[in-house]
Image (cartoon, rainbow, N blue to C red; front, top):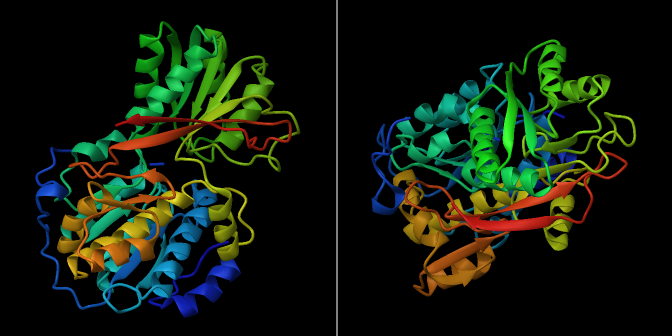
Length: 420
């Protein structure tokens, strides 16, 4: 379902809408830790923190939209239920990011900038974010993505205004590559989405595979808008690998049938965060049974899932809900600590509220510490964030998931944490 542009609302009005609706440059000139330089010069704060989202309502990552919107909406409710920011309710405006086949993200960003948004949460797709990051940060507005994993952002010239709560693919690539090797696969074939996310993740996974003694015998970079993937799959079949890594988005629904037709179900398949989803309605039972995938993010606790379902009872996946929630809470905490909704001030404080102080795990607990003049260290639903100078989380967790006979992910998940 496409979520309409609701305009600025306080949480009381937004909650009703929530119930109705419900991956991924140059060297960084300024780090968040040393003070942000706003490219276009942010206007002074007006006293009201305005948060906008550019998250997928349509396009190849639309399946990620519901949990991400739910994460943001849950955070907004908790923030406003506990006094808002600097004595005023936070305002939220949701917009669509679409995907790279459209210009929806640019239109959405233009709208949010016109409406004097202080912080923009999104996009989910790294390529979409790369298409609008200059417009956002150049206008002096903070951007926090809950799902961008491309390594391109680590060194991007974003004026110290870009952050992400999802880890760069250096970590997911290591976990994926190590998983493939540890499962006993000597050779691997890769089907790779041709964008910064797909190519970057594949490179990191390949490096880990080869350092572990394995070999990537074929890597096919494909156009996600292709009408047919038979030729791409044929190249993988000809290489006869032990394992097949599918690094892509929603076009995976077209790739999987071609793998089956090619007789490749005897191989071990591996998915990633861009395509690890519930496929129970897409493929015959047993199609994905036993196959594995990796997904950044710590375990989604049962009580957090219950809260998310209170926002959107129809949620089937929880991908990046925690990261979206944490991005929103962090923005509010930074504005609280700064005593201002000025984006430049928020950027300066995003790092300080995420590490190095007294631990707190809820908005209320953290705000109480700030009011008591304490330095805080927010640990969120997605785990410790601890932004480094590049705006990346300094440490993160990757989950290793397995599909059951119904093409749904099994609840038994192995989590691996590591430094970025």
